[in-house]
Amino acid sequence: MRNHVNIKKKVMQALLYAAIVALSMICILPFVLMLVNATRSGNEIMTSFSLIPGSSLMDNWMVVKKNLDIPRGFMNSIFIAVTSTVLTAYFSALTAYGFAFYKFKGNKALFTGILIFMMVPAQLGMLGFYDLMVKMKLIDSYIPLIIPSMAAPATVFFLRQYILSVMPKALLEAPRIDGAGELYIFHKIGLPIMAPGIATMCIGSFIASWNSYLIPLIILNTPKKWTLPVMVASLSSVKDLATNIGATYVTVAISVVPILIVFCFCSKYIISSIASGSVKE
Image (tube, rainbow, N blue to C red):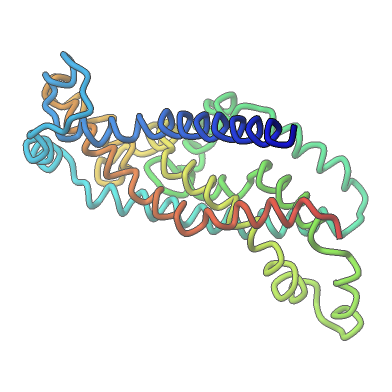
């Protein structure tokens, strides 16, 4: 009987591992296909499907180099993504800390408002946002791409729930008795404890800012200020699609590199933040 149970358990584990491997392959396939298509010509991509690398990588790269200023687009995207991510992380943590540990009139109403704004698609306010930027004379500027990102309802909500689960309120009483200021307590106690949760949200914030296409497209008019996603989209209009589709894959592959780097450095915090948030102290 015990042997039968053990065999059944091993079979279930094998099926589970097989399912995990299959799902992993499905997730990896688009990434592999992107790298393979970066080495193939446009005609090959449009006429056949293959996972075997081609011989047109240098030709595709020459098309990219001829039509796009990749280093400038790369630096523009890095500047916007890093700046907006840092501002989002800091001010969202500060806001979440305030909602978590300070009781003031309107606390619940304001937090309910944040929950409501989480459910509203950003595209609904696009026309009003554009009109506001025109009146403030901020068109063709990076300010509309950076400053509004500080208001991140989803990040505030996540960090508030996270800090409530990992940081007891009694921990703040000792420094207050010693005369420490509230900002000092936040920076020396609250911020380090929130670091895993902040790092987790920074991954999503960086990826969202890096991949942002619609807002940079309508705000930035000067080609030298374009971000990498806008440059990638403009490549298809330089010549015919068959010529540029391979070059487009090369550009997309290059644009993925910073996301992979950020994920590799910060992914360990995802598990630690979930594990910490699962235990109420």
